[in-house]
Image (cartoon, rainbow over all chains, first blue to last red; front, top):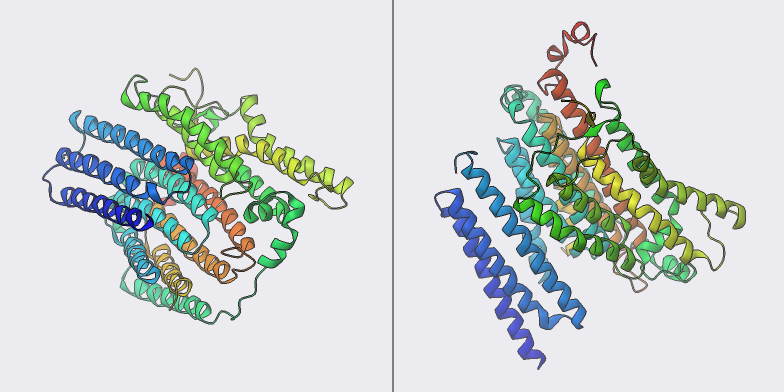
Length: 97
Length: 314
Length: 114
């Protein structure tokens, strides 16, 4: 049972890392700020969710697992708000994207 | 395996440190400083210093990052004149030689550290039962080296007084920061209404759990200060005028309680900040509960800066 | 070359980089950042010393680690004061230059206000 959980953790965390990599490639290669924001927010949040799901079997106790999920929800909230603020500032005539 | 992870961490740390030095734009350099602080958090974890890692993430990367980003944004016009003042090649070569010598000296000291290393861990483990807390770092901070913690709280307060002393005469005792222009119904206002209740619970939890697990009042106070700063930035509440009585009471309350308990110890237990037998845990809890709001208010006001406007200004 | 030694050597390099940045950067905000980098390097050396003192069931000597927490907080307070000074200098003179020429004709102009 422990072996299966470990394999699940490795697979999920590796998939999360791949999404982070994809988001960073998007940050570097997309042409303007709006598309970069899109890549970052979507890919990074999904990557973090996969990492959290992968780490859940390694936690001892339900409370620790719930804390991890709370961390993920906080990051979701913060990154969504920040990307909206950046995009709105750009639309209102901020620096060139 | 951990050596490979440490090697990667070291490489990234040095690359980011070099970036903060050579980046042309100060804002870009500051943007490199925040991930540098977060990677440093991982370095502390590699050295099994969990409390220090939490403090670095909160204060070292978080609050210092906010401080530097706000300053870099305001100082954009000074970029070009500053670049024109770069010292010439001889000064830079000399500086490089001096820095390399200092780095080599410290590296030699690290390699020549005595083996087996002297340590106070057994002494702490022997005496920790008398303090009533389970986390050895909290025991050291609040009991064995309580004087250091008291002086640290006072240093924060003195730093804040120093920042306030930079207010122009016409704004003495006024409100720090620019007048709120952010619409309180925007998405930032939404975040500033949803997050602070959760943040307050998390901050108090970090303080409470610091007795037996990694945590403590500095990390908790930083979370509380961040929540208040978010509310101020979103325009929901204005920065307080610094001559208000409640501000001054909130700032001085924590250190005053700490000093009072210290004097109590001088009378009852024979040494300043000595705790009477059996009363260590309750006294530590009282001091931490008093220091948490004081620290939160101090940290938040350190970030908002000196007062710049009085009520009634146009 | 185990982890603490590796991080200790990294800390030495960070101190060197920070010192170089402190001496060479003309912009005061960059000096403050370099000062922070240097300070973090020194804190890393202290944490390496703490890690080597592991024993009695703890992962590291708790006394240097507690002193490190104090150091981080005090370094932040110093940075905040330094940044406030730079911003005030900018408000007063319109530039952050630390050179003597920039501070030239101040006393007469600043007579009536502060």
